[in-house]
Image (tube, rainbow, N blue to C red; front, side, top):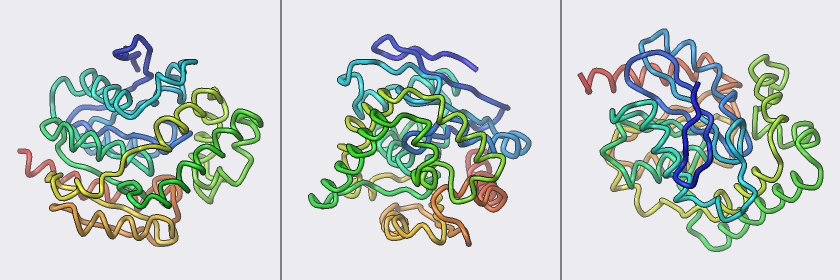
Length: 275
């Protein structure tokens, strides 16, 4: 594990496991690197370098008090600094679930030379329609206000847990992820939700220009993201898609074995291409 310094003097919690092609996992909103713990051992055993990190305001990373410290360009710069530490200039596979997928798309568009491939999980390219965009911003604002007023203990017991750890909270991986979520600082998550996630620029028009291979994974019952997955699959030039049966939003926890199998199959193809 390491502490990576940001351009504005804060600290990001980061850890890397194994050797080989690096794959950096970016989390859903309001979660931590612990959401990806089920992926570490299988991918390391297959010869890949697994990189986990916490966004600013999340997990063990610093949570600045100043709301102005939270914006998409800063988060993308943070991601780049994590890659500098973990991959030492080597192109990496970027994987992200929900907001993590959108963050990965933004980075791949701005820095194509640093991205070997994408794994986009129950994610979408953002909202272009003004009404849909406003509904998303209002949703982020509402969640931020809830976190500030009720706290993390209430948050992990609410219906929001289905969007953060999935619909099987009894699983050991879900319990571990929830425990880490509960330890976060409400103000950091609230600032991130209002300033980064809510106003995140859409990437719909840029998809055709992102030419790296992309694996799109979506849960069979994640109805909010099925159409977004179809859209990305149709517009990304080198995309392939997999639907994970019986799963909803947090497929890497709910259906970890099927998820890991699909990701490893894709990564093996990337490794052959890169050889």
